[in-house]
Length: 255
Image (cartoon, rainbow, N blue to C red):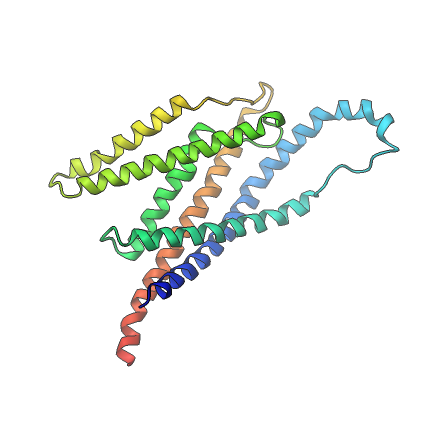
């Protein structure tokens, strides 16, 4: 099978798995995430209402509704955003799987699940525990650029930590001791992440009057949405890989 043909099949597989993962993540976000966003928006609007009321007499005849996109439009955009994110992630996942299978003896389905777990760990878990997601009404708009760069730095940290752990795991694979094969990569990952957490500055822009319960419910829902995306991507890609593998002997027998 030509290299381009093999990669194109993986790419289609990744796009299909990413499409399903994006839709599922959107559904989870709609069910468990949107109520928390609505509650946070209500708090934000209540806090800004007095200022808007005092300014109302000077702007009533010069300004209309400042809302660019309605909440219904945002909910539709939610599914569009998660679907596009799933497709993009699926394409990247397929490319990584294409190169990773040359470096490991893991079967296709096991490799897919492993890559999904490592991807979630590097891109979601490591950044989340340093810079957890915040709902609307939390955060200074003037620092959004700085916070974005810090989040990207935490993603790079996660990728470096996972890559180092995988490299050490490959070096320790020849060891006859299970404790070495398991114990060597884990401390390496934790040390790199810990050092990165120390070097990266902290960000805490949550007001003292913001409900702690709502904050953590929003963060947990955000973590659940991303976990759904990666789990569905890994399972979907693994299923399609296993299905393709099982269909090959049938096609060979038919000829």
